[in-house]
Length: 443
Image (tube, rainbow, N blue to C red; front, side, top):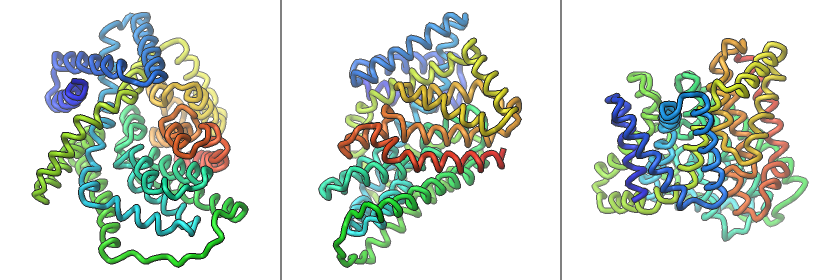
């Protein structure tokens, strides 16, 4: 039943986007709240408590502001595109799964086992390529490929976090990019080059630091000849890269022509791509089987995400215009006029402090994106978006409560603090410093 509620919520949102209607908006909000309640019942204990707490605080703030049910509805409608995105985006992996691409990636990584530097580069590059489509599922899949190889915890922690956190800064299929650009009204076409630039910078720094680290902590002294990929496997890898490039390019073209929200475009593509794959391959039996599996297993597993995203989104919206938010906004504006460096450090400190106690980035970054005015700060919307997304990426890696950190700590068998600060603190610090310098020139 929950699956149908969530999928109905997504379907009605897309209809409402193209055919605006006040009564349909209220229907969508009502179904969204039912989906939230259904997810709360089945969510894990910590996300359940945190989600209900954030939702409760958001509702109380809206009533205290005098906006009441209308404010709550607007807050939910504002976060609804992101809920649809995280729900529907996993469908993009269907052609990759049915096309046998994952097996080729697994062979490539296993082939590099006794060459740690190449293996690290392979893991981070693969995550850079797959994470935009598979989200956290990419980390889970890579770990499935490598779990029998018993990689050292430090290598797992470094490679998984560096590879995945890069996508947080550029992929339109991620809530981070979609939310920040959506709130700041920055076209994805204007942002993409800068976002990918920051991501590649993070990837380069991560690989360079691992090269230095591995020389001091050798992981393998054996020398085993690398087995070359067969022609069919090389073709599979090329097709995988082309699939991602074509998908991204098509999204950019559609956005430039239609001026639709990139979130909506990605949601539409998430539905169209599997259907197009079935039409081209005539493999409808497997496609339908995967779609049914998505409905019955993937969607019901999103309890934590639905709860946290909806409650954090409402809380972030409710904070806008409050006394606390106004004071923070005034303080940040004052710092921005004194020094961009102080302003950037303050932004990162606020988000890290909030996410380190378990509150999702959507609430912290979303509230800042809605509260801050780039013109008042003396910078461009693009520079503010880059700073917020860089901060989001850093907090995703460091916060012991982020989905990425929790998953990697479980796979690596070490604590979230070890995964974040100890294994990746230096990488995050260097990327933050370089990123702030670059953004200061752009802004």
